[in-house]
Every structure is written in structure tokens, then in C-alpha cells.
Image (cartoon, rainbow, N blue to C red; front, side, top):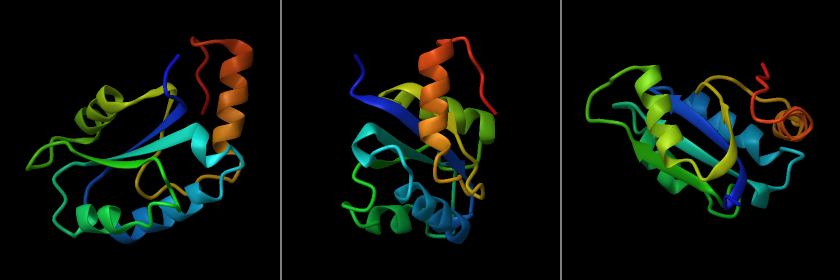
Length: 123
């Protein structure tokens, strides 16, 4: 069994302030903080994204990690693939660096996955 139920992969390129809001919204998920991890994939950011993620309060999102995709931007697909490679969750949920998740997003995706299996796609 994977260490986490859900991995949230967020590829980002120079969206530091928007990403800060997304991470704040993830702290308010109805799925317990110990049940999911957040993997932010830095796709060549030059706006201080890495420092912002590193400075995030560990207790706020205890399973927050930063992956450096590359020194220069390779694109959202390559960044997502890097995130999948670093995922520890049984289920991977993709968010963009400017997409504010509803409070029950992860719980809803986990419930759908448990009910319909790994071939289900939720949007």
C-alpha cells in the first residue's frame, strides 16, 4: 500500500502568488492532511516560487514537497510527468498553479476512485 492515499501534483511556472492561494486552499481540504501529499513541480520558475514553498509552514501542509523539473521550462506535460514520478499516493490529482480547489475536492476524488476503481477519470 502506498504511503499516501492521494498525491496532488501542481506544475507551476512563475505563478508564486497564485500558487500561495492554491496551497492555502489545500490546507482546508475535508480529506485529512495526513492522507494526502502535495508535490509542487517547479518548471523553471524565476519568481521565487521555490523559496516560497520552502518557507511554507510545515504544520500547515505537512506533506508538501518541491520538485525541480529543470533549470528551464519544459512545459506542463513534462512537469506533470516529473510529479507523477515523485508521487507516493495511490491516486494522483492534478491541479494547475492557479486553480483554487473546492474544500471537498480531494475527498470527492478519493471516494470516486474507491467506488469506481483505477480506470475512472474525474474532472
